[in-house]
Length: 277
Image (tube, rainbow, N blue to C red):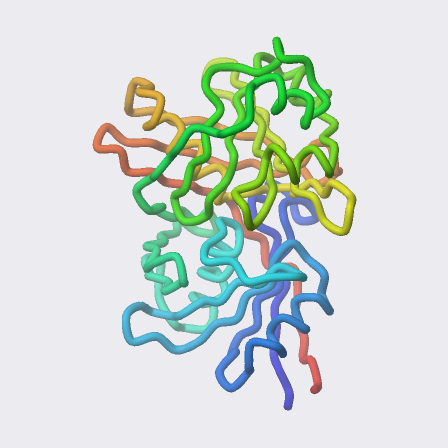
């Protein structure tokens, strides 16, 4: 079996930046175990598989090296870029995912997705416990941490300053205890100065804390956090992520007056090849 794949960088303002993604052009006929094994083989944040859909221009399955995700931001934008290149849609297309059908549009190589309407709930951990799990002081925690879900349930933690974002040093065991939804532990921390946001996304893996360069689902959940906390709308934010891991990402977030949440970023096609199984 010969499988064609492409490598793209998402949220990339230059070629060798952003969050890398592997997209298999045709996942039809692959079973779940093979998809999961291929995602582990590439060992990127996510690997996606394009499939036929009766509800959208294409169906997309998203795998991390260890599990499947119902929705994720940079795989959505990167998969849309590849789907367009393959003639499965134009500058406006829809992608069917386990988390729902996501509309995506493009202006050149800059893509925008519209996320699901958010749900949210208060965390069970105290502010002090969350601060300790993040390696911070309680005074570093900002207004109202929340679990938010626009397609992927994540803990959104506002911090008081950019300096606090940069100082965050999470503890894996504490995250499993105080930043878990019962299935996965994770935390998206952010601070803002005007319309500029600095963010980081952490999750424990094999006893260590991993940092994601650019997290579109968390950016969408930040939009949900703005809705949940009654922030004035509309808003447009420019979000920098990936600074600490040497993969700078630039994400755009728009929350409209009607509470539509849109995440955008540039996709750079880097290369591709054929895998023989």
